[in-house]
Image 1 (cartoon, helix red, strand yellow):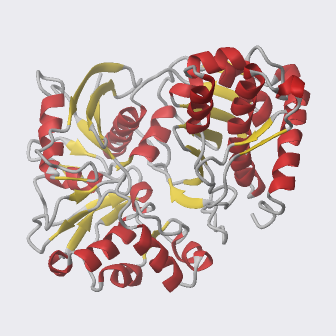
Image 2: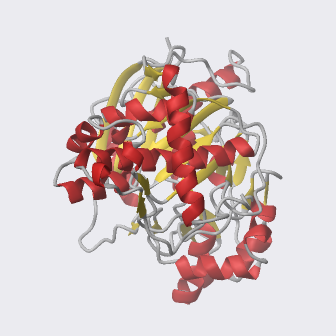
Length: 481
């Protein structure tokens, strides 16, 4: 029985899981937070903290007997290095929003949204490394002049584990979130890096999914690694026909697809996955924040809101909530507000408002799913992620609105599991026991399966009620998508 390890370095800490390389069974695991220095900002960090955290998470022999390691790192982070491999400033993290102006400027400079989606399949956002480079160039020009190499968090960790070799590497999945690598062509756009920073830099080689990055001085195989979302998809065992709805304050919808999508509206972001396929993504700004706002209004919590909602009936007595509380990205309504429609005397009850909140949130996410479907992405089942997915009201309402089977997987460290699965894949490919075209088949933990069943017609009616209000309030908002 071989052992492989997956390491997930998130924005807050490091998780290590050790798995059986053949079955995926978790044998050991560890976790440690990233140590922060006094005054360290949540938007940036000394990357040495990641190594300290890793050492703490792997103490007491967690990695003993491991043959290969995979790394999952937070997407969109940026490490700027000088010619000697020394960081010129702290690492900029995914949540850094300082580059919003720079993202808009870059978008305009390349002919707008359509120009960027044609070039790299995505539109600059404040989180993306391409926008971060422009921000450094404008706000820290001395540091910008020293930048000779650029890495992503998982790239840097792989490089450190390998003993800082001359060659630096990344993978398709993480590279596709930079804003200067195209999932469609598989190539960097060096002109976009120069446009952002003002000069050329060295970028890591992009490895094939099963291609190892190298071996540690102790002989451990290190796989290519990937971004955390791509690693989670690998850990969940997603394949063609699978989509994910991730419920945070905002919502993210993505699916496995056979080709990169070019969406001139910028609604779909064309990420790559960690298997050689693609991971088109649609984002909405309002998901669980809709539920929390409604719960606050009604003087309860999410569990209480769910209980209230189930006392109402589908359609919430005609009450419809368009959940655009923070503006919206899908559809593109950045400056709008939420709308509550259908108020009548008999609908003005807490349970109907609660139901409208759940239906509005889930209809907004269904809009995002439909964007992917309309682009030819097959959706046979939807994985529901996030703590809100455990709420009874979400589970009762989602299948009929999504129009397909809903899978609620058990809580697990899916990014770390995906990194471990990649390590097993790379190890097997090197040893000749595993195909390079597909990752190893690991047993998936028992998940809760929810079917639309007899509620499909009811779900369609609720959906139509929502769409009617949306079109009356924001006519043509989806016409160009």
